[in-house]
Amino acid sequence: MDCAAVPGNLSAGPAVLQILETVTRPSRQVMLQMNWFVLPPGTDQIVLCQFDSEHPYLTDALGWETNVITDSLAVRLGGSVDTA
Image (cartoon, rainbow, N blue to C red; front, side, top):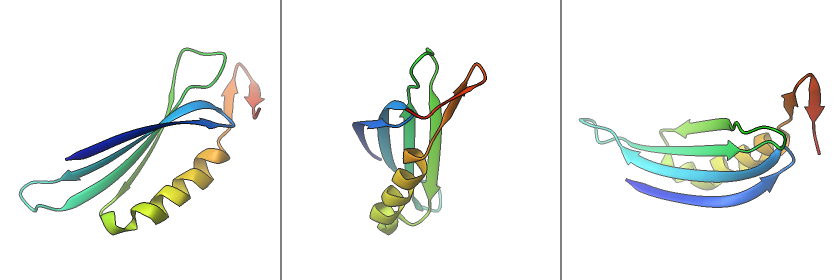
């Protein structure tokens, strides 16, 4: 297993990107998982965006795609949309 974490800032708030590479048993399949933990302002809760792939050689492409999705993330708190 390999794990890395990188802090960042999204339009929906501060965030942490966690990248995991794991091996399943008994098939020994390598799995890639990218988890974005987003901390929207005005709440003590988080939003988790989880992305999985059975193709770890696509790490760069999956990373780019997750950035596109999380950069456009909007969180609704109390009936308003926070896009700041």
